[in-house]
Length: 176
Image (tube, rainbow, N blue to C red; front, side, top):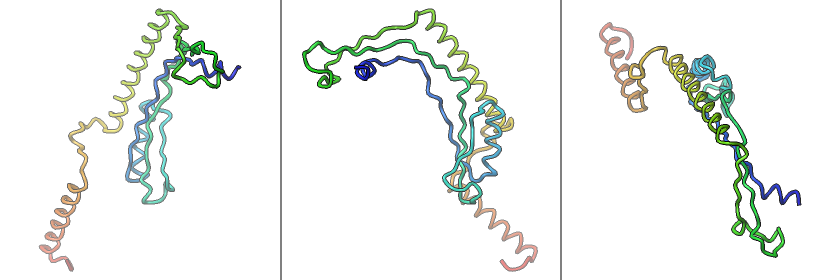
């Protein structure tokens, strides 16, 4: 009977899921400043992980930026599942024949207080994100530090190599 009661009652809670930002980095040396920027900004539960040994040059460490410090969890109601009143046993009843009764466990004033607290925490998290960006980019605008895709990088490296070859050739420097 106790199992049936547990199965027939669900708690309603307001608990936003914590979000995690994953950043793939080229090496542990690249992961370190990202992690430092996150922790300094207030994302204390952040860390570095990899499926390989982090000392492996092919590891590609992942920085996980997360924080549970601003989490807010509160039970605000309950949903009770009532059988439809038929004569079948509890085990024979399926979910389609169950009525739900939702009951609030708190009043509206308490809900308004929860919303106010949640909004304050969103503001605090927005500030953490701003500090993280500032720490990570060091005051540079994002346009100054554009990401280079594979083809752009390949073309840039080719141009640099050709320029280096021409410079060596012009100065009579060794085999090319």
